[in-house]
Length: 499
Image 1 (cartoon, rainbow, N blue to C red):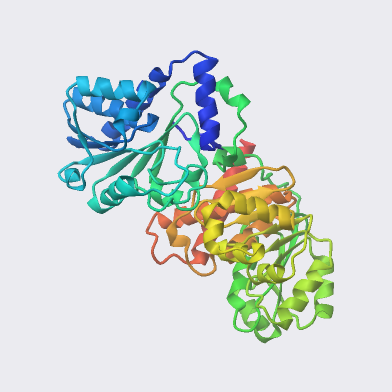
Image 2 (image 1 turned 60 degrees about the vertical axis):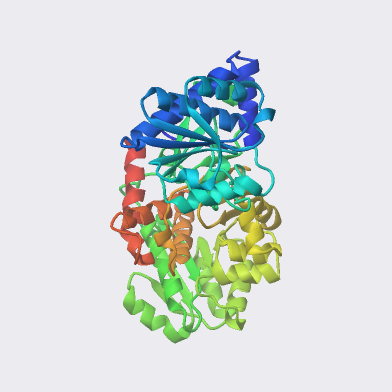
């Protein structure tokens, strides 16, 4: 099944589950049977050669799903060992019934011990599920650490044990799964922060919950998908000229940092801007012009020299290579005096961290370290709950906020929507990638897209271009490698929208 766009908290999924059971009279036991069957089908599809299966079961409904899987695996002729954790005598309801049925089917059930994992072809993690609210400890932590040390492939049921389903934060220790099968509603924590690393490939099954049930539980956040972005970028008229495609002014490139401004400027062109000007330090203006002749490069020493360029611009991209000295502060201050929409990144964000202010029409693009400085927090606190952090940034600074990282988040005061981009890859952890994103978003904004749309589309294009480059390997990727793929992805979106 194709992954839905809607993402939910654990509490919201429990509410969906409750509505299905109480209002649609779908027995909880039937939902558990469907969950176990769906996860077992994935096991057979993804690991068809697996013959020896270890199923680690907790005492809740997540464990119940695991017991169903174990019974089905036994019926299919596989060698199955269930390793039980927690106080079995406290099991109740559907989970207890699933355990009893599993035992009656002849499945071996033993208390968990670390050495019992050896010799299996695959491990099923059905220990903790979505209800985890404190750090794991005791036998649970020992089991998680043993799984991760085993180097045996892991299929997680609903969420990897130890991962906070709402935030993607590791609660002391978390299973590193090769794949996760999520049920009824996708859990938001799987798609950002550490969730991206621990969930592996994500699969989904709605367990045949009626579609109208979802209307009563608004999603926490939505995934960016190609389908959701269709039609946002209009096709071009045959008679348009460069003025119709917008003018971007990039402000940046202090002494020793010309590359950042150049990358942002070229990225704005690749995203379709009609004209891109660079206001950079006079020391290297001529060099940038030679390296990229399409850019209109101005050596600017003072705010007074910047003002004529501001008068010609439709959008400002401030921050790439701006530095934190007097030159950069003065130019950024002049930009703030205008009413122009802005994309703000890098050193301009550090300036905001020391002198916060609100702006109605800007797009801020901090990485977690910059976000921490802006909110007076630590990077660890930002990463512990990225959803809360991006909302706080948005509330504190206005406009649109893009919190970069694994599972980039976009929050907007325009429409109150939070979006997550689950594309992109570790190869993009190299210098200049943020400058390219700044330029792409600015180029889209200059063409008339409103700020939240420009931010969402820009983040997705940037991430997808990175994945296109990574098709030949993640290591050694350069920010400039993305340029042809940004252009290609954008043009395919336009063609699809028109077709």
